[in-house]
Image 1 (cartoon, helix red, strand yellow):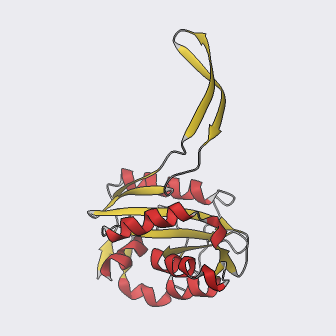
Image 2 (cartoon, rainbow, N blue to C red):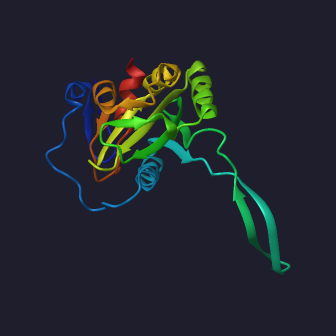
Image 3 (cartoon, rainbow, N blue to C red):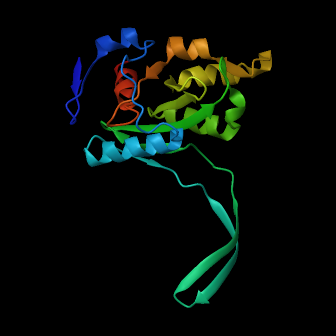
Length: 200
């Protein structure tokens, strides 16, 4: 199956066999960007190209003190971040609801489960029960590698924490997830790998 993108790119499912390999050409133009910035930029491209509508959920805050220097203006003097109730991103792609997290780690060999909260796992499981597509985009900062990790991997390791395991081995993410090579537009072409999830 071949999928054509507006920027002229072509992605075939045959490429899944080489998902562990790195591209020979590395994009250096915007090194130093956070994973969140890279995903936000990619989502802007997807929206402008009419491919998907995906947005970052705002972090809720509790406003404590507001100053009104003018009747038409207000300045927040003091506020606190509330704990996020769900995940980082959600939206619609090809008629499917997407709900996902974006996480970075400096660990070289594993991804700590401490990056998640129980209510986030509960939310993702509920979304997946309703046929939503859930996953995590994971960046290993030290090696500058980005992966799309299907939610089932996270659920399996989260539910097995009672056995003493507190992280997901990078080798498992490499084997069962999808390594995302950087591109020009979009910066992180993660929807190519969502296509593979939809075909399962």
